[in-house]
Length: 428
Ligand code: AMP
Ligand code: GLY
Image (cartoon, rainbow, N blue to C red; front, side, top):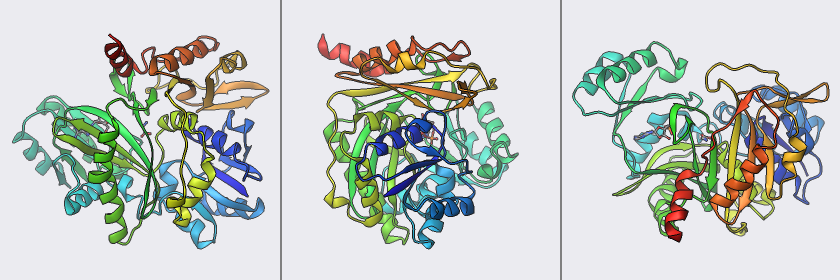
């Protein structure tokens, strides 16, 4: 079967790499792909939002299955369009992708079905929102309702910052996404992510992960798309996973089916594990980036049949095998990210870094220009490794990082620190 992956980041490189090992694959394509994906798939220079062009490419290349990586085409209805054309795909329809596209939608779904989440109010004008925050204690969690590439959330420690954030959101700082805002109760505890595949009825747990959203050491500084991640998340014990499945994931899958928008694909739950149990922070309708990279490193089984089963409604027939131990990924980004950065610098010695035993490098923002690997984005490389422990995986990943010759890039040196401290405590 010929398969097409949609997207161009590290997540899509990891998916394409895993799919390329499937004996069921005829030809593997990726649109638009990147400099690393080109090693495992044929890259097609298409815009993921140009659905007509994608449908045409599916016919030209006799594509039997499409794997949609990022949220934007899902929310805009790519899966619906493919389905109308009789092409199978991985991912939710536009109406099911509302779990990510609208924070208010997910909050109301949780309310209707008793799914634990932070308390909230929603607002459509700045005046009422500001009156509300004046009556509740800090810190304030203020969210633009729609998609804002992970940047539509402000945690304000004081009233002034909260009111400014409200004004900015209604003034259009996040475009359409800020026409409505949600103000939430501030949750305390430890954050973790949980990924399950679902065919609209059954849930197949994949793995847990923790990511590092902040750009600075010890999780400080501005938010990014993610500077690194590891799996499993120590806080997600088998008992906690079962609680999350029972209280959060399964009720959501059942609710979506009952409300006429069955959810198929991967459901990514962002969770806060607090003293009174797990609460849902948010859902995403796709794999996390860079969490997907660690999940694909840990997966032993063929990915393709599992993804196809989410479409066909046969997930109950699938079992997946995983490597023991842990996986960790370090994001290398262009200096300046998540602010302004320069594109076009040349990355050297990647082949030597990729030779480190246990390490694998996924590309997030690269292209080959005149035979040279060039940085083309904010997040550029995901240096990923397996290990018996998070500490071992980190050691291997940083050994590979240190071989890469890229002066215009940087990375955090402490990915996995919470888990590593926990491992240390356990040993002593
Ligand atoms: P989100 O985009 O909804 O995942 O939010 C981004 C980040 O903001 C999360 O990963 C949390 O660190 C933080 N956050 C979001 N909502 C809350 C909340 N209700 N309480 C505490 N922290 C939150
Ligand atoms: N790493 C966070 C995300 O993919 O949303």
